[in-house]
Amino acid sequence: MWEFMVLLLLVAVLVVFLAPRFIRPGPRGALASGTLLVTGVSSRAADDPDADAGEQFVTISGVINGPTVNEHAVYRRMVVTADQWPVTGQQFPVVYSPNNPDNWNFAPPEPPGPAPPEPLDD
Image 1 (cartoon, rainbow, N blue to C red):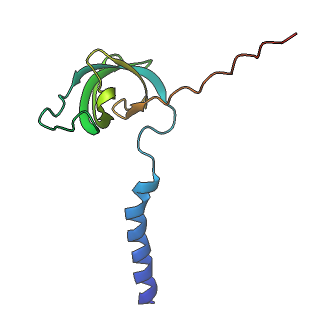
Image 2: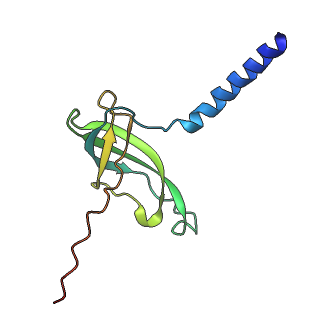
Image 3: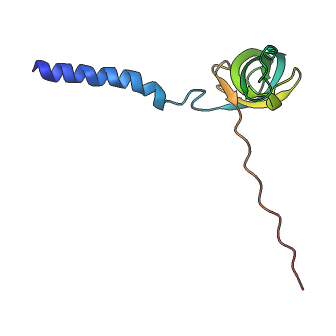
């Protein structure tokens, strides 16, 4: 009987450690769409000679405006390449939880529209 309890305990520990890997972070349930206005950006690593070559951490701060919030202050640390470095005043589409706007993500890119029709050759 104690072997069964130890096995059950091991399975429970395994679930506790592996469950966060399978749960997607970010807002779940009903999402609200809004706009993030960047109000602050961390500086680039100037002492790194390869700073323009790869990815770097950047911390941005800004305000989210949407149907349920008005200028809600947020921040996020993320990894970007040097050519995608955000600037103050830039706007990004975001999705957030209406109950907790601190739980936000960048909006997924819109799928491309239908291709234009081919011209008819007579």
